[in-house]
Length: 444
Image 1 (cartoon, rainbow, N blue to C red):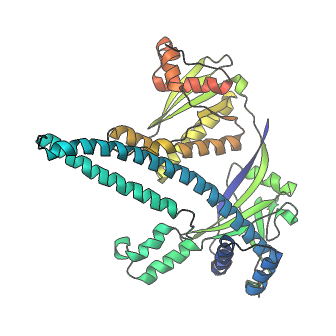
Image 2 (tube, rainbow, N blue to C red):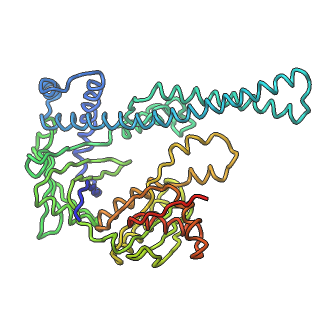
Image 3 (cartoon, helix red, strand yellow):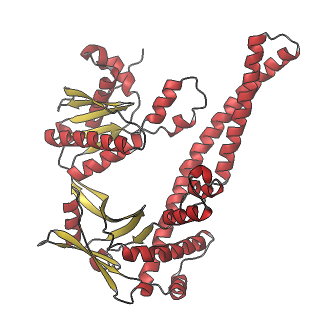
């Protein structure tokens, strides 16, 4: 089986190689923001507009074309993200409206009793607490409505960092100049070189080649007109230490389209190459599957054979949570372990296709504090993305299945009969569902 996918490889640049980008990035991002403002205000980015920008800033036509394509792509991505965010906010507002209506009814009943002095001390305190909660929910509803009204605006450098200028001391800045310098470095941090299949080496402005004798890559970058007084081209030697390195070499031999991003993080510069290629899936779900049930603090794993019976079970512990490096490294290691296991036994990896956005938006109170904390600690989106990336690199079949009733089916059909706990049972149902077996929930 052959599948298609876009891959991104990254490597760090030397300080000397990044000198040109340090000088060029401010000018590039200034033009980028100008094109962005023109586009969102209805400017037609036609050939006449491209010529105008080229003459105004003395830029190459290919660079302006690259900026325009990236601006359009980012704008479309922002619109799609806005649709999802609006749906989540509407769900939150609807849930709040229902809660506010219920609370108002309760307060109305208690208000009559309070006016007649028929409430004891405990009931009177409950009545006051309900009024405070009603005020809190109304404020939260107004906050979400304002957020919905102001949606769709992109702030280069992030809105959060922009608002830090109004609270300098609280955010560790001695002066406004110190904040401004850091804001500029955060805002101006990316240079894009978007490629095309009809151009030389897949990109006219940034060309990558592989040296077989020296076993590393060479970059040839066309400088902008204002920065090419000494030489028109910049040459850099780089290397990519990644399992996808061979895929990149094959893509270079095929002369396919390749895009590049030069990225600054703090004081370090990185080069990212983005390319699309076909990859062969080496494993087969007909040999069995490895099902994974993602939980707070651990992964329940079950391996099945060709007939859908249990071949092996395991529990993999997740000790760290959040967006820190420890949590990310730990999860990467566990995903790699699962993928290598699938590759060794020639089986597919199966997980649930979960989405917690609606559940998270419905959490308003601390009635079940343990459940709320558990739900927000789950980093399922990162786990699913890591599984998707790693399986593509090592040629493992990756399947997402419907998560409906996996735990209930496991309790009803397998846990008691096979002496399994609910999480292992759920991972067993997930693995069978990936193989194509249909386990139905029996009606009582």
